[in-house]
Image (tube, rainbow, N blue to C red; front, side):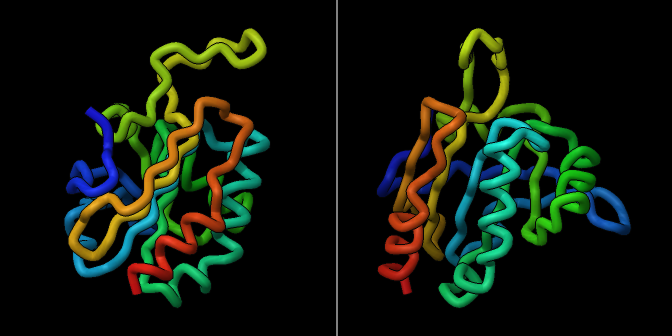
Length: 162
C-alpha cells in the first residue's frame, strides 16, 4: 500500500530523540495542522544533508502556512540527533528504524543500486503534504536518491490549504 492523493494518510508512531530522551511522535496527533513529511535515505549523506538543512533554514515559511514539517529516515534516533546538531537542523527528525512508515507510504527501496552502491532497505526521497484532516494532498516519490522534491509544488499545495 502507498499513500495516495485524496486518501487518508497512513498513521504512524516514530521515535524522535530530544534532550530529555526518546519520545514517540504519532502522526494523527497533528490533525488540525497541515503536515509535510520528507522521507530521506540516510543522514550525513550529501543530498540528504543539503535537503534537510535547506528546509530547516526555511521553516518560518512553513510555520506561516500552519505546517509541521518532519524529516524521516531509517537511521536510529540517536544518529538523527547528532545529524541535526552537527548541521543546525531545527525541525524534528523522526526515526523509521523498523521501516514501517516508509513502506506504508510507498517510499521504500526494496532494491536500490545507484551507481552500483547497494542500498536496499532505506527510504526513497519523498515528499507528502497532508491537510488538517490527515488527507494526502500532495505526493512525490523519487526513484533517484540524488533528486530533490519539488519544493515549489509543496509550498503551492500548502498555500491552497490555507
